[in-house]
Length: 636
Image (tube, rainbow, N blue to C red):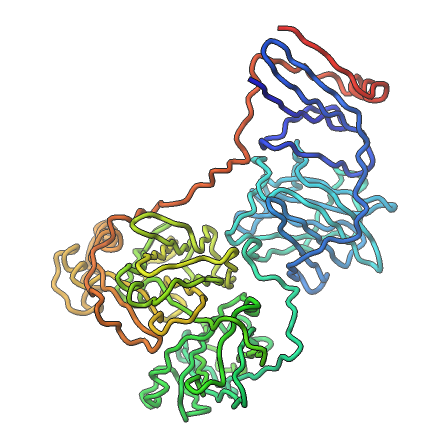
């Protein structure tokens, strides 16, 4: 049996062993020496090779970043990154001549954060790998998992480039995965004297939620023949008698001499209204009712607008513009294409301010160079309904929206390719996932976020594209935290109500793929609580009189086990015939179903029958200075 294990002696004489199965090179912050020992075990002999090496900082000037986020406007702190297989290349820069720092945080605070600090001093660049235990100076890691690539100071700005593995296998580092990641940042105007002299940042710090994996690239290239049209709310006076308002507005789609394809959609929020505009949906239809503006629940809404249900675009707080792949677009200008776009905008006004007059809206970019496929949007999850019920004082209570295979058989004429997924819940949402099943077996997590942030709801790129077939099943699972609530949280349109929905952007467009959703049946509440009600209002009135423990247990049974109402709808939101309405909770589904990664980069490599004695730092340095290569044969 042959084994090899690599150990690293750093410049301080400490021995460390990489925790990943693959060998990693450790770059120091300046040209220094390190010793690398590789042990080969074969039978009774152990052969140790030790090499003397100089490590020089890479002289690159920049990384070829594909993503960029402005963390802070005052310092123009920019976080750029690029994913390359199992590694992430990062550049952090800010208007300072001191240090810049970022950290990957579990919750937006310092404790538990994986932090890296970089600076340039006297023309030499430095990088320090650290971790925070409390709200104090972060401690230095015993293993260096960040590789410094370059550092520059120019025009009052510091720029540091480095790389690391997505999973460093260091328990002091946080894994970078598809979850929403809270990235903390800090700057200081003074360079540290050394790596132990990291000074307090005072108030020059902050946090931003970022989707690092599966996010859209920021270096988008526009076609040469692009143009755009837009629609904005007509100076809507946001009502001050409710914290939640849904306002609707219709505007005309331009008339085109020849068909065009939309390739980009963008929401433009009026400056100063970032906390007011929560989310919006844009629907399409054929109508003569242009420029209609009113509360979405107005009884005076024209009938054809009330039936304007073909979803084109969705946006929520924190989302970036939606850029379609080069082979996909949304069609306009053909004979049966829509003449009207219809905005449904959710205003969140918890302070009941009478001073909001809003002109936010949307912009659609199009090209006359038609693309290969026409896109559609398919909605999944739990029907927005008060029969979604979440008990109070819960750390993580789950509800489920199931799309049954008998619906997808009717909705799809052919296999489709999904290229974006969009997950949406409200304030209590903490986890979300859309899972894809076939013949009772989990295929994959189409979209998953175990660290969901209500304030960052953006489309995630499906790369490679996913193939969905007629007869496939889907489940949207949402986990909610209601520890600070005293009453049941219901499904509904308000910000303090909840939703559990997901959208897939796909091609080729299907006429029957509008929505595939479910919700617990009313009679499941009657059975679970031994009551007789025929409305949600009656149910919640009765539950308010019951012991909270019994309410919790009953709602758990309703959510996890009960029969469900199955809603299968076409693009015009009509129920598709031939689909069973009452469905059992699926036996093939388990709430903890997950496809495990078989490529465990952190599996330990054992060292059997061998011992390593750690020499004093001085001895190591003497050996490194005088020996270029030493071969030691040790007999057992």
